[in-house]
Length: 408
Image (cartoon, rainbow, N blue to C red; front, side):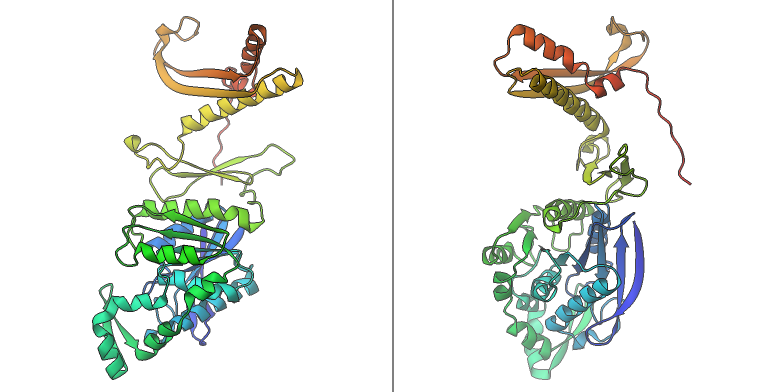
């Protein structure tokens, strides 16, 4: 992953600071990320989600709204509507310089903003909200003790996340005029609503209203014990994995081959790359397919995906089942379904009578094959012989040469 930092002109003419996170190779699609109220593009949640999405070939544009982070302008002069306008301008910038965003992602009030902006970003195919309110006016609850002062004096300084911000009455007027549920009802884009049932900043009832109001296609994913700011990196990694998997069917594009992968008419390379969202988590690209590998918690991982030996067993099991199916169909055998159960263990070499190695520990792969169908004993015997002829079985039981090179 690489990150390009630049500025673009916002809806009000200010220069807005942006970061474009890019995957290795040509992006499969572009996403636009809107951060939470009074936050910025470089929050832990925004960076971690963007980083994980790039591992799936999705480029992500993050930017600071007017008056926040490194962007120009005065936060006090902004409104919810001006944030929506900045989002539309960010989408325009992507369209002009790269490719229009196919995916809109918004966290907290940013989620409400992408819902409001979606109708003006026609290229977007899908929208994701994370801990979003169903009404932008919900944000005024963060400074409810100052509402009277804002109305009386026209503005007041409030504390948000421990930092001082000036809020004007124009902001209150603007959020009060929003009719977000009407826009959700006419979204006409795929929608994924993600929310934690224990969110004590924006309650889960907001997710219910958004989901019930939206028309299909729509999906809901519970974030379990995640907090509102998605401060746990494992929660951010999970959100990104779900988004990448969910949005694939709406993008209409196949994931590109990562750098170094072979073309489809030749041997296909498998590219494994650290995600850096947890200690051992790996992103695996197999042409247009993407997997996640990890290790169980007991050995230092987070158990977000199968481990290396799990994948090895899966390869052997899949090859076994495929080989038996091809043979059965060719011979017109009544084989209804094959189920292969595999296990990996270490055993003492001295306990293996047929093994050449007689000292130390050796790897043992156990494979139990269950064949459904009206097969006679001879047919079952033949299929078991065929199982041992699957290409992966032959590879594992023959001499293997592994060539390792350092990439310059």
